[in-house]
Amino acid sequence: RGFWGWLNAVFNKVDYERIQAVGPDRAASEWLLRCGALVRYQGYQKWQQDYSGLPTGPLGKYKIEAIDATESCIMYRGFDYLDGLEHVTEIKLQKCIYIQDECLQRLSETKSLQKSLLQLKIISCGNVTDKGIIALHKLMNLEYLYLSDLPGIRQKETTAHILQQALPNLRLELDLE
Image 1 (cartoon, helix red, strand yellow):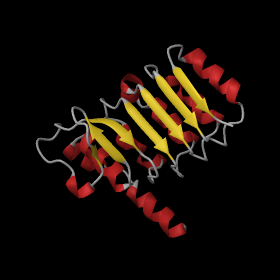
Image 2: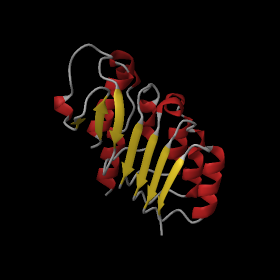
Image 3: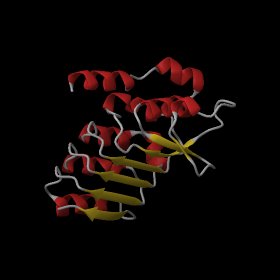
């Protein structure tokens, strides 16, 4: 496990020069695909899953609209890649062993995502607690939040209430024990 943890940390290292060179969407696509996540671009139905099949063309043409990080190795140290993404409307974090409260807090503090993110699903991420879910209150345009199989959530009603107070237009769906 130590080797894989190290390798995943390498995959998540942010290359700021690369972001400058190819733009935030391309650099984030490379990061996400390297870590095993999928991306969908604005105006396209198909999910991009193959790193070597990344679309070519003019830089800035492909804008990430959706991220499916199911069983990916994305972790906090890579979240700087999210900073310039202005078109992401949905994110799914499912069975992500490295996702923890700090990741959700960082997600919530990402200015571009505060504006664009409409749907978020967090499923079977064992390191997420009430603190991480409450941190999502800064995602002011979030319309839908689905939470399922999160054993770290201990105060389900309180957490839901705090989030609903902060985001009155949020449709919150809970599938928690």
